[in-house]
Amino acid sequence: MTNHFSISEHVTDIISKCAQSFYALKVLRCHGMGDDALMITFRSVVLAKILYAPPAWPGFANSSDKQRLEAFMRRCVRLNFYRQYDSTVDQLVADLGDGLFAAVLPNNQHVLRCILPERNTH
Image (cartoon, rainbow, N blue to C red; front, side, top):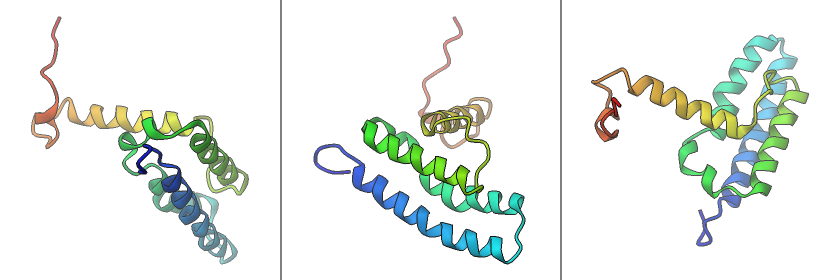
């Protein structure tokens, strides 16, 4: 993050690192790895980098940053590394947050449970 509360450099760095992973995925495809295995590998390597610590950065991402991430994801679909592109990066981030709360709320022993406010029963 820069002094101007921008994460543009971070987005550029992440997209660059993820694009480098395309070469490895293409090599795996050439050596016979199936599409399902490639998609699992893509989600584990590439998508994990894009969605790492999402609550920390979306509010600082400007429209240009979001458009670059969306364009990158469209490229992933076009290269057949990711099929289910029916949601935006913002929606993927929101789904991660929802999943986290769904895991924390019912588990009184969860390490993050202590920082949540008390449940409102009204």
